[in-house]
Amino acid sequence: MPVDLHLHSLLSDGTETPERVVEMAAGAGMTAISLTDHDHLAGTATARQAAEAAGMGYVTGTELSVEWDTGPMHMLAYRIDPDSGPITDRLAMVRQGRETRNERMLERLIELGYDITFDEVAAVAGGPVIGRPHMAHVLIAKGYFDSVADVFDRLLGNGKPGYIERERLEAVEAIELTAASGGVTVIAHPHTVGVGRADYERAFADLADAGLGGIECYYPEYSPEVRRRLAKTAANLGLIATGGSDFHGPSVKPGLEVGVGFGDLEVPDEAFEALINR
Image (cartoon, rainbow, N blue to C red):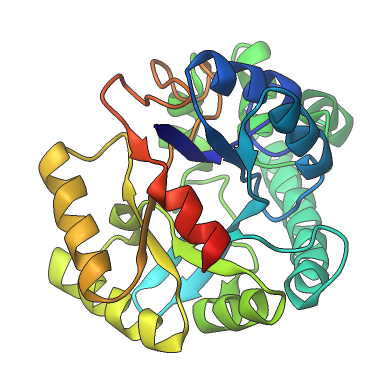
């Protein structure tokens, strides 16, 4: 039976409430899920309660932005205590860095001639994490851009005029802190590491030696062939092959749905069982 271990709500950069995300997962026939909002676990209690009420399994998760030798990458940290622990405490510092970066980005946008305020962005965010997608929605509402993709392509994407780099955990630090918190780390959507196949497979091996737990092999943007190849790589390294839709909402990722991605995604429930039993 299928599971979805990579979901976002409006508490980070998604558009739906945690309850609504769980409802959509149940409607898609998922047997287990994880809400993996960026850098925090504020929606965990609500999502877990809703999932259990719907008869689905649940594993705590969050998505981390980390720095590796090849550049930035994302990691999913599963099975950690939302209230305390080494990784939870470190994430509080990361969120503070995010807030400082948001202030600097808004100052830059104003310097570039855009009419935008922190209160407007916070109102769109509606939760504890404010990020670039929320700034994008304000700019769209004011008629500066036509879509989120347009905003990122021209203004807020990496290297664009409104972009400012933010603090990230080191990859090995994230792995070690998550392990010290009783959790498991997984490389998210590895193609976004931005290097060639040989380089990121070498990164898998190096990070596996450091304690990495898995690779997100089943991902909507991957062909069935790539999913199979990544799963084989994970097995060869003794890592868990996980996956998820990376659902954010229709206005953020049009056409991508909970559980099934663009229609052909199916993450086996063995991934959930492996995370629970690791």
